[in-house]
Length: 222
Image 1 (cartoon, rainbow, N blue to C red):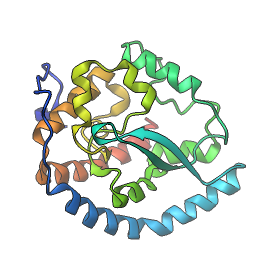
Image 2: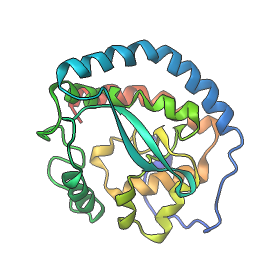
Image 3: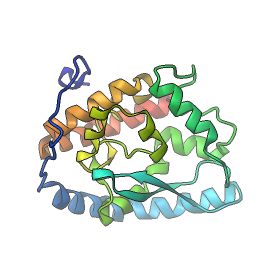
Image 4: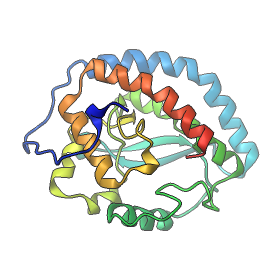
């Protein structure tokens, strides 16, 4: 990753910082619609595979927090056994934000709740393809900070909420920066840097960086 995006020093953003980003919605509609049309056959095939692999629905919906604190439901291909509670993830989130992550990272592929197919979906990030529907709908952007789970907000410092002054994204600086090797503080640092530097050219650059990052993650299982 370019040194421009490394987390080196604290960022100080004005509380009123709220980039206009007038170019972002047209960009997302064009790119998101083209990507969704291309990915739709893959999503349908994978949805069938999920249902055949384990009992339960093909898709998993979860409440997330978007721009300016607006709640919405994010969609993924289900990668866990149906009906799992979130207690384990809450504990992992608390340790991660406290700077005490477990040895297997924030999102472990060794979690016994993950299905056989789910491990492959997570390793390749194919479980996130349905989020293209969120992009076209306007809940998310192609590029931006990851959308927070509501219970994660309890661990935010006051300045951290500025990461929500832009739409959340499917990919972003954190996602292309070997995310499982970064701390929560480094993740938020990258998100705040994106808030400052957001532009069509940066979004395109992150998109081009996403493909090799996903391939590297698939090879290493991270």
